[in-house]
Length: 202
Image (cartoon, rainbow, N blue to C red; front, side):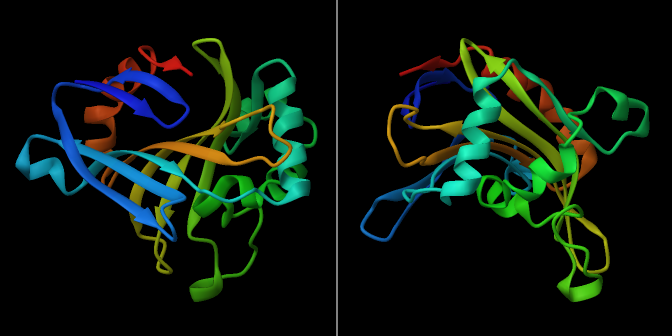
């Protein structure tokens, strides 16, 4: 299913197994989110591919770290897998802490919030990396959202895009794939990854 004018994305071919969902605007229309869901009714409420434009500038310090990372060669920044720790950025935990505003909802994670219970983090960050996606560098984060009882609520992959690198203020767009169970995440993940390979940037 071809989709045009998807924020900073000129075009993307989403899976034919997905259908258009809701488009929501906030404020004076300066921020928006567009969602797509599986056509299969039993999965449609539990899986989504969503494009989000925040419509506001990212905190200056956080934006500076974000842009610095994107200016460097792609690399693994953080991994919760101890077997990959030697490949991570030497200041991985500091970088995650300094990009809370960049990461949006995923910024409230186990590295930035050490509280427990109700006040604890709602996101468990498994991996963060900068990648080159069809000629454009983006930040990718993977993990699981959960409730205060540590019960998984959504399995997540989020791509963070500098919507206009030439602009002084950094306004971020997100492309997010989420599923409410691990099984659904694995079922649709390859379709999402194939869609990423079709992206043409503005």
